[in-house]
Length: 444
View (tube, rainbow, N blue to C red):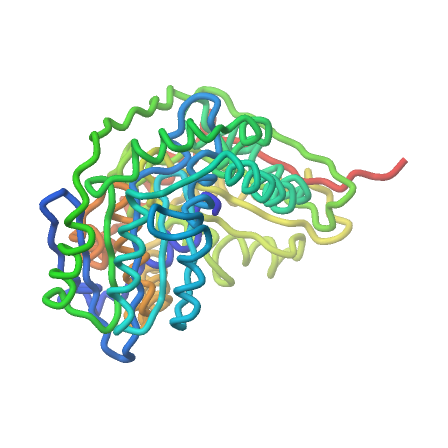
């Protein structure tokens, strides 16, 4: 229920180069007459399936003054329909031994259930029902509003790191709607109405804006008639044109500092505006993934070796980049000082490592080792039933194709030293970053 998968996006799309010739998940796909895309990922190890419905709508598609409405609707989808009372969906699923959850990101909302394969049809009927027959009351909205506001208080307002993360996003994106928190601003959550929520539901929750992904003990031949029966019977919606503002050129670095008495471990970070698979200088997306691994992707990375191992001025240090966004993404560096280390000194050390990177570049051996590490991290990805469903769902929900996932090993394998150095110099530069400091506020 946050801007989802910062780690998942990097990890789940990283697969063994040995699997490149055979594809990654080798899914079967088809499209229903009403425009709903269907993906099947076969895994017959156990008689269980993961059923996911993804909607191509998230917090970045909300209108002015309605931040949080996508996440709020996710909560309300567990209320009643014309056929079932509030909470009945979850009770039926639990009685049949199933598990469920949902999540909202900036770009998509997804609902999923894991059940025995012989209960799949039951789940499909119930999920299709709430795609089009949701019934809400003003009382439902008022009750769930308290739940969402409490979630915001516990996850963000009572968490200094959460507060700072919101402020960094608001500073990093000057115009793009990623600057708003997925959960929404509290005062706008309080103002959300039943009428506005139902209008959002009717606008975005339609089969042509949805993706069905089923992974596990199933085949396309078995799934297709069920998909046509339950989802294919739903008429197309009104159709919507996605309208998002573009990000203007950035010309100034920004700094955000939060001092809070609840902080136990100070931290420093610098976040750069970066391209994604679909926005900005997209040719850098694969090289930036390799760069993040080399510079800050684990114990052997440059930042960890320099700050944590060799000079012992930080308890942790690293970098992160995620390419799986419909809009512009970000590349971040972070470090937390050891006790007694001044934040100014820590920042200078990180900036020194960054300057060396930009001046001298990465080496061929670093690039090759990074590729192998990335491949090794997910060599067993196919063994996880939910991994295929989540990876493919994420990609399709932001506007990518199945082939983009299946060809990932070949594309990452083609990244060169020159490509990594060009990407670093294009993205990690002045005028495109927000530096943030999380500090302990001294009492008195």
